[in-house]
Image (tube, rainbow, N blue to C red; front, side, top):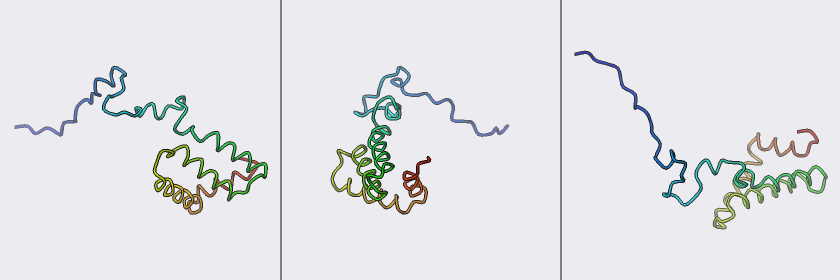
Length: 118
């Protein structure tokens, strides 16, 4: 008897609705592709307007870095979890504030907003 090596799992076939381009009826929300699509107008681009405005106000000297960080936190909370419970929103605010001060990369990005160069 000859012993052969392990066999692969074979070809993976997606569900029929994905092949036909239909959204699954199992979920009420958008598909993963729709969430990542920047042309959709939500998701990552939802806070782009407020962030550009905050950056402009900061560079113009209307607000300082501390005020900008608070405005950025509020913009993210409004755009990402506006329908969440107040407790979840408060938890996200606290986490974002902590990250803006403790994470060296985020702290550096926040400091770079005050510079004229990017």
